[in-house]
Length: 256
Image (cartoon, rainbow, N blue to C red; front, top):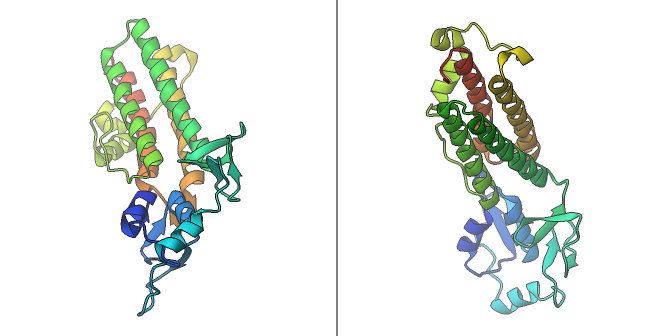
């Protein structure tokens, strides 16, 4: 199911301010698109428009719809519509000038994504400082590129495209994670203990953190039967598989 973003909406309306916006049955509105329509006081209905659609409001009506903003106000509350001259410290910008509390699912997801990326970079630096394997550092760099891509698509509300991770397609990731005996001569991924090496335990930490990030993504993008950014959710699941594979590669001696 495709998502109508604020950018798509702005291009479609082209400055018009109709009384009603009809969302096709096979599409969803992004949170930013909903807020944009709410600010213009445009009613949202789902389904096909009537045979004789209501005419768009005049430019004068548009001006009156947005003229209620208090002088000097820079921010608007995403949920209540309240205006702020200064951003409260307990709130954060969701999109543009729209504010939400810092425990909003979208902000929580962004925080965990930021933490995940920072941890990957820290692990890279630690391995490099110890003179560790360059291939492992490079694979972690590829992981971080995927995380940065997720961050960009989430903030810009763009649909994420399917990507390779550590050079493997989704089918190749699935095959290797489900059959490590065939690809790495390892019966199963061994749970780490301190005797297995620092790099192995670091990979396990990253595997656990990406699973936490995946759960945060579900809280962020899944609302009942509606799923936004499905490719981000799929990619996070594949990142978990990628770390599993990297742990198998470590045990198989492929990081030397």
